[in-house]
Image (cartoon, rainbow, N blue to C red; front, side, top):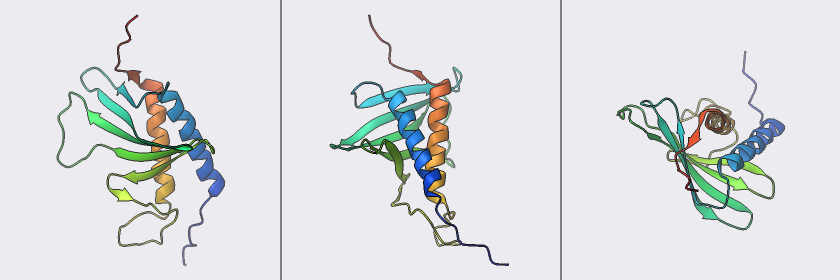
Length: 147
């Protein structure tokens, strides 16, 4: 039996990108260029950094990266780093690159030489959404405000 070819579910992908835009706007208040959030328990804390790479009239390109806190770094597992573009006119945020993987296609034939899943682009955007939800639910700013 032949598996049917994957078809992009555009409404589902757009909904994920719209939700990610809303999550990012909550995590990036004001007009700064850099935000830092701590997620986790005291000693096992992880830091999430959001940094603006480029601003244009209708778009903003950002880097979202996890940095090891006090936990030792591992050689076999790299921490997530995403390049994300926010489209302000459409109110959507889309993952452009993931740790060197660029120009992610909406659909891949499977199997393929890079071993991407058929819906790899959607999975990147869904991962971003889950990651941002964790930051919203458990994250706290590492910047101390002075009054």
